[in-house]
Image 1: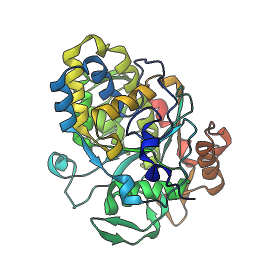
Image 2: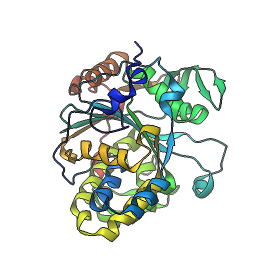
Image 3: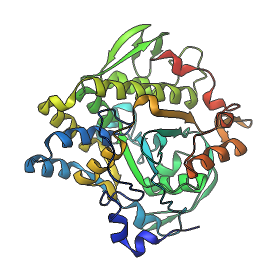
Image 4: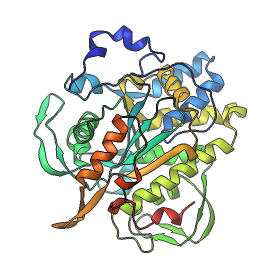
Length: 374
């Protein structure tokens, strides 16, 4: 069922608390320095430390890039539930354009190397994160890009939605799969991710087993490491460097989820609010690194979002992979498990915890590669 209440009354949408960031606002939450997986939270920490500086405001605002998802998708979207919860689609782009060319030839389009749905629960004290394997075969809906119609496709790889139709098509595909309306979209590319990690001074991790990947030049023996941007990118992208892994996207997702929690702990531990110079450097890097939907495309909007998310610590985030099984016709692809996937999407729509039985028989949460890093 489509929902057009915000289009009919935009003032009503703004009156819920955070101007221009979408729906579901219940008033201010207690601000803490624990951060969520999105770089928006990193930006907000900086802004909260120096929001009174006009130069900083306009400089950072000028860094931001936005895409008008709402205009592209129109009114035929899942219901916009006004229950205090929030859903974001966070994507990592694997474009080889520009400085990203060192990771391979530019073939004219970017794909979603990483895709996560972040569900912020009512009350904004916890979150569920659902990773969608890029090799998942899905029903991609018809999309429009640059005024041209892009026909849908049965059994298309999930990451082709972003490749052929950009952010709006990726959001439309996720909404078609899940029946969950996305409030916001955030994209980070390879170069932006590396610079963000370097600006933070690296991220501390501990490996329990050796990880070697010739393709990303990643060589980590068991023990403690401080990863710079290049090595961090290698870790979250490796598919073949994990012992016992099957070379698929599923093992990589578990590493990504573990790294994200390490990143959150790192940010909380370095005391950004007491170091204005470092704060500004991270904010400048983060705002250059991301592309958002047009509702988040301002300093004020990012500050508002981060305040909403600031009370969520790494121990309050449940991370799962969309329940899938290997495609018997092509083991390098995966298929959603219908019943279990429906349980996941129903839980998000109803603002409930994802039931453990939903991922019990999924190939996505087997193998334990996430335990190789802590």
